[in-house]
Length: 206
Figure (cartoon, rainbow, N blue to C red):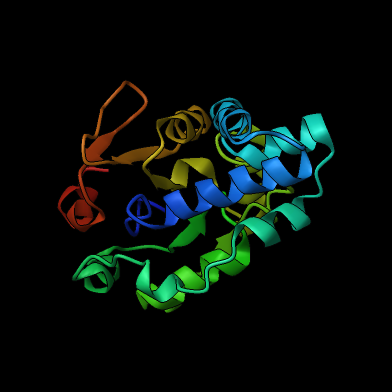
């Protein structure tokens, strides 16, 4: 079970800054906020709920489809993707089914997987829409994902860059892998690596 952004590709370099600007502009326009106020609120909701959208829906009645459409416009996406060399080969070495579990909208996730040239390696994509807008680390989102793919938690390995999502995964009984340049290994993380390319090396121990 794989997260997408900053797990299978580097989203921090170009995509996340673009998304952050788009979301801040959305809040400025639709909530009549100044830039600093909108930026602070975007971050605040992300820290509390795991996704800015969840806070906007809960506290402002924002239409999630409208928000996702207007904030996930990437006319130059192919030039923003940073693909690790050998990613496809590494993923093909891993045994078992592979699925995507992301807080991103499905159109964006499918586009990124296609540009990474790995879409055919995954059985399916569970997006923010699939979770009925209950993003990671929400327990509700995880439970819906397991039902969607007909999976048992103790048969799964969650590969993810966000510690809060891994904490929920471990609570459900999954094995957990933290991917981050400065990967940490709290008690709920079974393995930590700096890049997805290192997965085959640790897969045997999971």
